[in-house]
Length: 193
Length: 193
DNA sequence: AAAATTTTCGAATTGATTGGTCGATTATTC
DNA sequence: GAATAATCGACCAATCAATTCGAAAATTTT
Image (tube, rainbow over all chains, first blue to last red):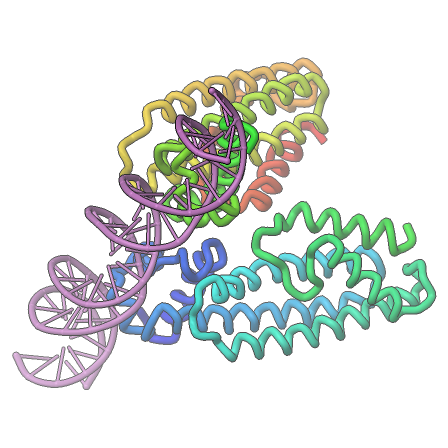
């Protein structure tokens, strides 16, 4: 390898794919090594443990996600279509991260504090984005109701009714189906045509 | 439970979901039991082994798939839209079954002959359906080329070029992306607008 | 209502799996 | 060609996971 950081990134990306598919528990070091076409023991030259890899993956992904959201927040300025897109991106991102997240609680690993932090901060940002979306939506009259606060609450409640907690998804959820259901509710129910 | 068959079916469906998500190897009896809200040992009252459950699942799914295809073959009579639908159904079904299928080769289990049978038979039927699709397509002039045989080959090759072997998909493939790519090729490239 | 039977389950067993180590080997740098 | 960096195979201890088993609940039969 050219340099250590380069290789670490390669591991993070590769392991990330596997973690996101199978979760922490079901992902084995052998698997990661096989995917990297490397001896398992070589990985330990770059990382201390499986958990360290996992940590790195979560941080890496959270970062990407944050950037995506930052981009998304800008597209909120345009109406429905962009919003759809935003919701889609958001759901996809959630699916991915929630996999990592669930993976931890799955096992009774010692609690990673830093992940709780990520999540909390993330929730707050999410809420801000949603508010902005609602605000613009109301201003541009794509929403059907008067009080934006009320709408925000309505969406939240509706989503919860669909068993999709607004700020975190359960891993069993079939994202495609959920997304359709949610888009239906969002864009046929609450929003005007 | 009301009767034994009833319960077996419940197991098959539940286990099927887990198998299809994680494959044979990574699916544990504990997990299945937990999902069924039952003691693990109780399952062994209805099934001899994990492998027997797996067998049952594959047979069950293959049956559903066959029915879906039988339905799909009828919709081939109408042009493009229906075909799109057919391709979609087919890909979805492949994704599911291929998960079971790959799961076997993953491990060096003794080879299940009966699954090889299913696959072979299935491939033949697939090919027949594809032929029919091409034939109708040509007749209704939605295809762009003269020889239907040639087209069939072209599609096959194209798909293979996309790393999607026509008759079986690899499990790592992101079905949504692949599908879009394939539909593009099929309906913009080979078929007339 | 007790005996017989069916169904469920917790605990134990046993073999396999897996995260991680270590010393040796191979590449790379100086 | 020595010194350092990177890779690896073989190994270990701990955990896990499929299966068994006997006994406890349920249920049915008598």
